[in-house]
Image (cartoon, rainbow, N blue to C red):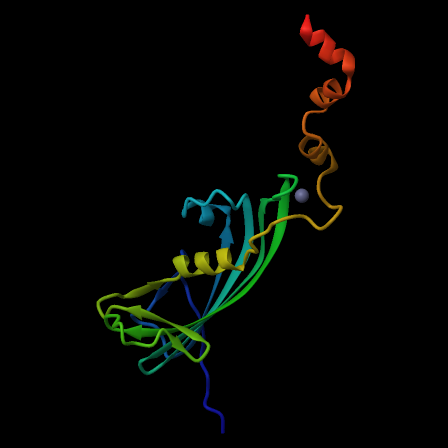
Length: 180
Ligand SMILES: [Zn+2]
């Protein structure tokens, strides 16, 4: 017979998991990650963000596992046309919480879970830095629209360079004009 699993809906805003008083079983959190989240990290690359972070925390004895799925989109600047570019985000963050001070000999990885160390005195786990890091890592190095999707108006200004000067260079009379 399967053990009964309790599912709790946690009340927490601000990306905080209250480790003290966490109920045994599974607790779920739903957080919105918006533009102001990235602003609080002084990240100016993210022009906008509409992400949902769905977190499931499982507590069993001393074990606390965190499964966090972050999905949605962020808006960044296109490297080519410098206009807004939507980037889809879809990341899974799997953590195993260890209590006590971090020891250099401790494993940082437990299967596919990253180990996070929380001092015994700490009553809560703040996930914001972790979510921030994972979302930033999910973005590709090159951020460009698909071919042909760049803003044609912006491209005209950028790739054409300075059409007036080019015209002058190709015109022999322009060179003459400069001599007088
Ligand atoms: Zn573009």
